Image (cartoon, rainbow, N blue to C red; front, side, top):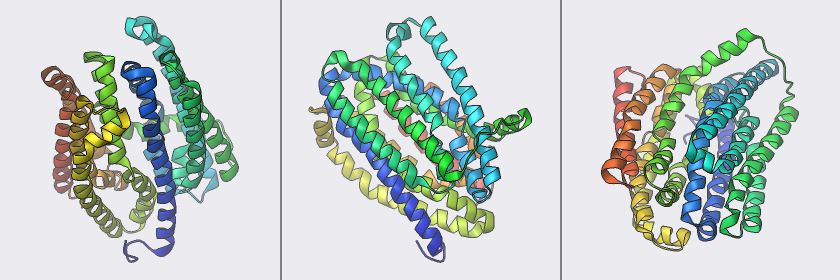
Length: 419
């Protein structure tokens, strides 16, 4: 990056957070890929598919309890990072809402388990999986991200991930031990969440202060538009595995889940690391100089797109070899889904910073409407394509929607003259 666009102290801090996030995300994705072959061999594709389905189900509660604060609260922290009183107020309001939403989510999950035979049959898997929701709300990653102190998040997650990996190899030794997988995952989330909360209190001098109802209500309103966007995004992303589980069987769900995990690694590593590292800085730059923020975003997006133009075809060709290493066999269903999802991943990466810039500009309304429209089309499309094309249908719907979002984002930006 040119020094004229990003000054030396800014560059140093962004790079520090980028490397912290890269290490974090690298291990976050690499460790599961190490565990994956072992789990498939020990518990089988069917049990693996059940666990993936349960995680997809529980992920909806994670979306609800996050309420878009990973973007809205992070942005506000970045703008008030030197005001301790303001940080305490934001922290207390956000955590209060998250706790209330978690309690509500748990009640809803219990009602669903009791009401739906499929959930009731494997109720323990869903109960153990829910612990990850509680751990997720305890860990204020949004606070560390907004304050650009991601090294603490990295340290906690690296240690937790290594412990989790060791526990999988120690305790999961046969098909009967499959139940330990969601349990260990939840224990990891709770442990890292508590550790993150303790460090946040110490490093930021936080106090949990009871907030007036009006302030809580205002926080709900602030996060609403982004929350709608996040729900919309996940309506056609997280629902993919969920739809596979509903419309096919646990084995095909397991195959698709394997392909999606590999493709997601390609899509997000190290893209998400840099995206999260640069987001607070872009907000601060835009607050002072709109044109400078725009130039930086354009340069980053162009570089990202070019890198994926090179990387995706190589990984596409290596797909059978990658699947063979991870699964122990070259399952055709996994290879086909992986190749299709790689195409979708390219469209996501070619639009990542462009669409994020809508939030930097304060155009949450456009961001929200764009994803809401995508969800209204994408959600039924998943089920239609699975019905028409069987298990590849989910991946085909992903390609269709991500390409459409790319085109609509470009058109929207031109229409509203955001650039």
